[in-house]
Amino acid sequence: MPRKPRLEDEQIIHDSMQAIRGIPQAKVEFMVQKIGGPFAGAFRLTGPWGERYYYIKVVPRLTPTITDLVIHQLKTTPSPQNAAPLLISYYVAPSMAALLKKKQIEYADCAGNLYLNQTPLYIDISGRKHATKAPVTDRLFRASGLKLIYLFLRNRKTINTTYRTLADDAGIALGSIGSLFKELEKRGNLVIDDAGEKQLVAIEELLQRWQLGYLETLQPNLLLQQCRLAAGEDLSHLRQRLKQLNLGSEVLLGGELGAALMTRGPQPRSAVLFVDAKQHLKIMLQLHLTPDPQGEITLLQPFGRQCRWTGLQPEGLALADPLLTFADLKARDEKDMATQLYQQYLTPRFTG
Image 1 (tube, rainbow, N blue to C red):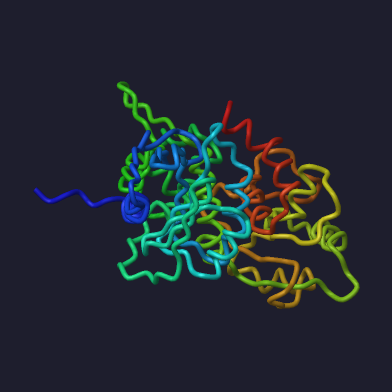
Image 2: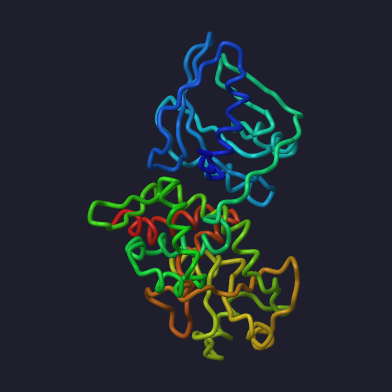
């Protein structure tokens, strides 16, 4: 009977552990496969040097776009005492490896590159090129899956909504919902009770993976234009123009500007505007925006029907959901504002 295909994370964990198992006199013992927290599993490594515990964080493709966010997640996510996080990836390029070592991040990849630094255990295997074929990205972390996960992270109760409603709200094909649910359950992020009720679990781990997927996959798919403000104008002028033109029904504010309005935070330096793809050129003209790859204004097209925040809106303006704004702040390395947004608006969603 043929073996069931592994999920991408499972395959990467299996292949990357070969280098660790090859350590002379080493013994690897997996403690759990899914622990419900922000990590994918844990293992104990024993040998003549003693005993070390590691928690696994899987990042299938470590690219320059997401590396800073990955490092931040590893540095700030609590892990059990006397245990260290281990970054697992398909391939860690030499430039990425140098950065990880500088930041004291231990890692292993499927090519056999390995960096462990737990005194007296020190192993540095580098320079190996990826030879095996990269696993196919799970559908859950392609654009359609990321849109569905967004709904669940936005409101956990929607996981028991009908497939038709989920497809419409996420803006994805109805036929994809069933397979996405199966992947979610296989990953350990979905449990079903005897009454058939679904429950989302290991939310923090799923949120971190969604953040990376949003930054690397979903946001680029939604990008319409990068722009700059007119000469001599700042974001206060943009806000005033949005109010004067009564564009609250056509433009959702996110990014630093959206976060500042939600949290009464510091003066923002950039903004994300969610606008309909068919209207974005018209709105650029109305707001006096000029295309500029280095500009401070990002135009994205919304997806599905749930990008608008249902909370209190500033007069004449409309805000994108805090989850989308939080993901954008993480991408821009606005840690303090992102933390405030998380504590004020997202923590109640995940713990309530």
